[in-house]
Image (tube, rainbow, N blue to C red; front, side, top):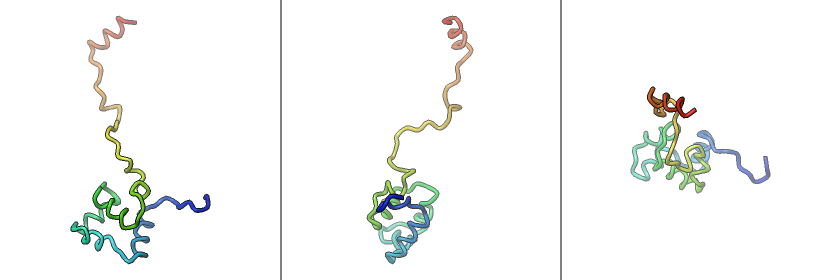
Length: 98
């Protein structure tokens, strides 16, 4: 590891850093008028408001804390099985062109 480069953040390191600074997820949630259990789900589900609050408290860019979620992309291709299938008429045209 390069000197001065911090390893990637994970759930345990984020929670540990919050505790080192005297904060819990529940207390942080209450400080921004959110339900504490909504912060508990941040590890499994995207919650932009909770992610932003954690990043702001830790003074770390949200992109560093949750790199798999940021930057936010607009389009996603889930699977090729969702692409429209060629109809028999289309297949006949493809053969005629060949």
